[in-house]
Image (tube, rainbow, N blue to C red; front, side, top):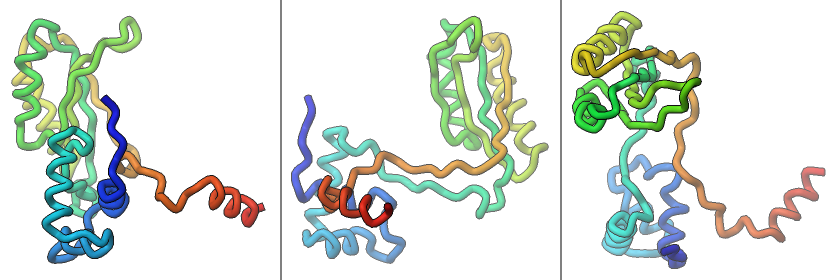
Length: 177
């Protein structure tokens, strides 16, 4: 079922889609920006999470700013009958930031389990990859490491601002010409 956002919910999403304000009381700041009470902002966010409109509220750290400059997406060819059991174990490792199962695309792509690891050095990342390999054991037939060479901007879905109407878009387009 598709649900149309109420104007108040849309205002909250627009106010938070680039991140919560970095202030002592972020929900109060969102409330001030949207004209709602802090309690209503929080209640609406919780309801939208319960309804699956918002999946989660979390932080997206800048690993480089934290000194964690070595990153690798590890990909694993894990026996299909074992991946459902082993995947959550890999995902629970404290150094795995995200882990997920994906369909194989054989013969080009044989890997069905992905796990992202970060570290302060290439040696640390290699040690973490070895730990995953040990955990997977004989259920893993092969793996590869895709090393990050640059930072990609991490953002969630963005709604167009309610001020981005076709009329305003045309006006901006004319100014740019």
